Image (spheres, rainbow, N blue to C red):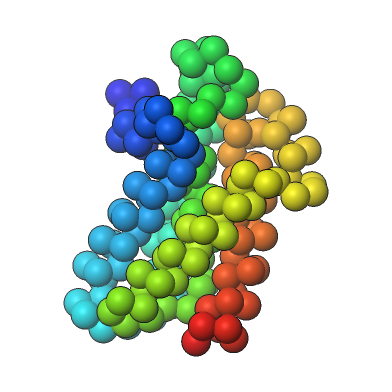
Length: 163
């Protein structure tokens, strides 16, 4: 069960780019949630943001709680297969972004997904230093840092460049 949780349903077991696979699985789940909430109309930003923040809290707590186990299980300090931190990061990236009706929400998710993956891979300062925190905290903190950068970029892109 723990392995299923930290790999986000097995998406982190992808042999190619497990972090991207975990983020893609989280994006798919968020799009399904958005579709269920919207019924074909635009969901208020506040409602979707509450769901996203709830997911950040839940996945973040699971990451910290199971982080020590995952480190021992996978034999690495930040196991690539552990992607529950990517779930928290993508959900934080989506928090308070403008929402759209129909296919435009897919566009917003794509922008958020790409921005989050770029910042999570590049890890601009001071994100890399967050990885030094012990156990699951370091695993989670760098993704949340990347999410903050990605969210700011997405605010600009989705509000002013692609309204």
